[in-house]
Length: 159
Image (cartoon, rainbow, N blue to C red):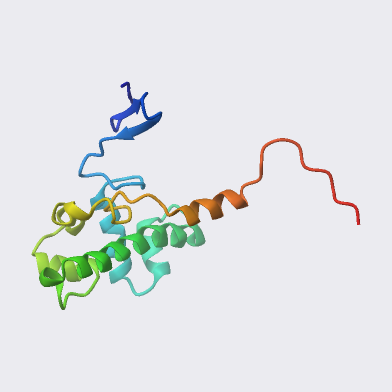
């Protein structure tokens, strides 16, 4: 095995694949830490509108790009909260699936790092940024069907 990269990425010659050991503070499949992701999502939950939250979180980016960036952070986090609320129903029954609701229930400032510990048995099934579940094959197939193949353009069909 060879070490390559800052996040401890190794190559397994037997399986012909790479794997990594993700530090518990980092978000999976997203840049940044869990606390940074949570801050952005909590800002979106507490703002009057998505535009206002986007301007606060990403002031250097134009509004449409900032709104898309914020949605790419907020949607998976809310998915994780709903899934964990269902998996751990005895602990989170009656709790709103929001950062504020979970923070109040757990009595902590930063929810996502604590939820990664609590949901440790389910990390392989939880979506990023909390869990490690890879994208579904349907999503990957859709993304590949949009991608143009390499090389010259095919000849035009005659009518």
